[in-house]
Image (cartoon, rainbow, N blue to C red; front, side):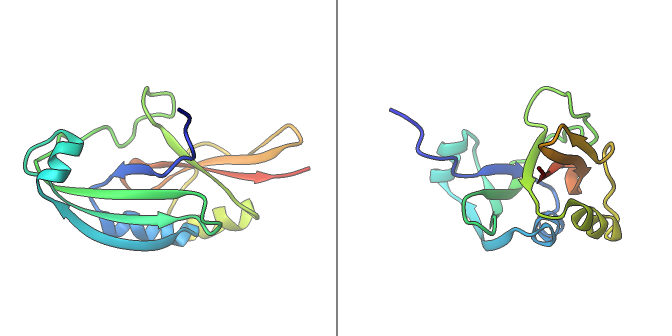
Length: 145
């Protein structure tokens, strides 16, 4: 048995609208939004009384998807939104971009700041981290050379 492909990355958020807007402005395409609840979802996620909303977004090439989920119940315990990039667990999601300077400028115009600095990695990439809504760290990567 082998993996065929990565289906999506799921991110739990408190403000679904703000997180969706951030990723749409970054260039992902909203595929749809839907409420989810019932025993089927309770059994899948191992919680009782799940009531949530999800938004599914897709990269322009159709090969990558992000699922944003807002849980209304059961109640949650907040995480550390300012966790640094070396905290155990999933810390960032990366996207390839064509013009990293333009993307960063657009994000800065909306109030998003770099986590560190925009740097060059050898003759391969220009890279940076930005912190989006809910503390989500997004890596931007522009292939060079």
